[in-house]
Amino acid sequence: MKSRSLLPLCLVLAVPAVAQTVNLKQELRTKEASASKDPDALFQVAKWANEKGLVADAKRLYQAVLKLKPDHQDANLAVGNSLVEGKWLAPKEAEAARKKALAAEYSAKGFVEVSGVWVEKDKVDDAKRGVFHHEGERVTKEEKLALMSGKVRHPETGEIIDATHLEKAKNKYFPIGSEGRWVDEKEADTYHSDVGRPWLIRSKHCTVMSTLPLAKVLAFKEHVDRGYEMVQPLLGFAEVTPPNRPVILVAASRSEFQEFGKEIGDETSSHGAFLADAGRLMPIPMQGEVRVAVCDNDKDWGTRFARHAAGIAYVSGIAADHGADLPLWFVHGFGSFAARFENDSDAGWFGKQHEAKGGVRNLKGFFSSFAINMEMESKTIDYNIFQAGLLLAYATKGGDAKVTETMQAVTASFADSKKSGVDKAIGKLQAALIDAEPKIVAYLKQLIAKAPS
Image (cartoon, rainbow, N blue to C red; front, side, top):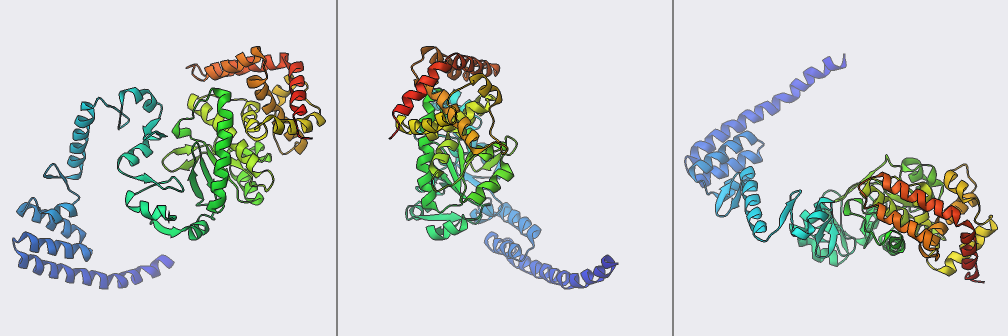
């Protein structure tokens, strides 16, 4: 019944619109006849038609202008044509001409085209892996194309902006919203306090996301980079490719962290830093879909959680680059190493707590049952987290040649084309660590001896 009652009303409302269109058409015919074959006058009629909503007529008149005067600049621009080497070309033809000219220019320089980007011959293998280089920086394909087109990075956030806005950016103004309005830091902080539009801050190695004020995000950025750099030696200083660049989501509060755990986490979100569920990738501008690491902004543990997040994001990125699946203890071992093994004194302090919880024992059972979940007591989670880091610390700098050799084999396995190679290498590492259990007990005591009194 409602649809029947609305129909007459729609017809009544449409009458004035139809009458107005008829009047405009009549006026258009008069203007068009008056312009006759004067291209400039006819262009003004086309412009008027476009402003009045007579789009089809405007397009027809623009083309009429071009028949009279093919090089009419305004008419060419109106229909989307571009001037290429002194000749006006339609959009597709212009794009083809530009590509041809670009190909000739870069081919002459010895460059090779990879995925639509021209790169130096010695950078081809990198480009095929999604690694592009720009002024000493490793970037994604999308970033490379943007930077090559003349865009620049915001000096505070690292986001890519139009070069015409660089002066505003240097004066600590920031673009917000889809319209790209520029505002001061205070207003930008308010805008980015919404969980749906957090700050995205590029650090040296990672990207930090947060609804925290910019000043706090920048402070976390330093700890995130520190965490990344701490765990790099564990895998021979391997770099994550730009598409899998670590993204660290820093929760602004405990409640926000818990919400992230519910929305994108799994059982491991019971710890203060976790990887998003493998099925919940997050789209990151200029990068693609990424498995982010999330950390709690705790007043006492926040910076350690940030380093832990960087550690697990780093090894997760390396694994993603090579299509490898890693055991959970190995992943969180990287986080633990970044958060609790910054120096021997720090490691020793945590080592004391570990020994009080039972110390190193039953490594075979540890590897087979390692878990982090809500059913576990916090002290058990802490035990598992620290011991995972302790095992990697021992494997890399414990002085045990046999175990270190197996750890080096793990690093080498990531370069193996066979995905099973990583699994086998980590299996051998675990076996070597189980055999070395008494030595690891002694190593823990050495660390405890260096703990602050």
